Length: 442
Image (cartoon, rainbow, N blue to C red; front, side, top):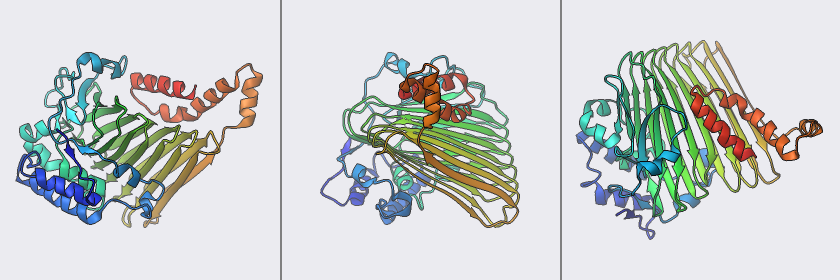
């Protein structure tokens, strides 16, 4: 049974108490290091505390009202009864992929369809990988994600149990995408904390898709951490599609670490949800790295979407490009805080950042804060942010050509989203998102 978080205690103390109750059972770890990492993480979590509204990084996102709910921690095995027939409608039509299914944060081999993987490639549950590939997990787990300064990463690290582990050995190309299909089908109001670890070694190539969908009307919060290691001259593409219901909230932390000459692409598409916070941090830690960050978020009703990004240029001769777009209707809220840091010895950096948003109502809000922090003198860096409404002249022109007001609006919004959608390098995924977004705009 899920563990009830005691509502009579201070919020942070509830989690510490739950950790102490389960540390010797379900949270004892696969080895001594993992147990030590958990213990250090819960201590750091208690010291940091959840962010207050006055915290600069959270000033536009009132996460406290989400955290105060009576969630249950999902620490035991998942007993949700789903069949492959139930999962099939949530797969991507026409996509030939290695499919790993998570239900309520737990890897379900019986629902997955991994097929024949290339030699040496591993796609499995994180919990199982801790036993079957302990050396790899030990070498990379909790090495990149910042549990020292990020409270949600610390909390996830302390309670890590399952998720997905993907390993691609040196010079191996995974021709088919790996699709992580994450379904929330909880009967209770649950706090779920999946942990994903993706290791792409030198010269290897991987395209990873994660789709997250909520199948229940209960109030849920997912605290997800994904660590991505991209070896020298490797290529890793990460696509995240978030489609939660009106009571589904997500805090997603992605940390990518790049070695020399590697290419990392991350695309985040937020289609729905109650409160969504995406933290995407990229560290190109050697020369010749490329980092591409793309995002598209849609807000309707009272949806709140907050995207925070950081590209930390620690080494010279690297390139980064960032483009985020948002469409906000009704009383929804969007936040974009993109930070590019160029360290003192990181000369010859090219970094570009752009955020553009459209407000479809007078009650929608957008907060944009692009940042450049540069300590080197031989760089080319630019950033910009614009927020506005649809061009009335363009709508008038389209209506004069026989389109209705709704058709004209939908056509303009699709054109606005097109340059983000066209960055998708997997055709069936692009077609699915085209259809989903067109339906939302209609």
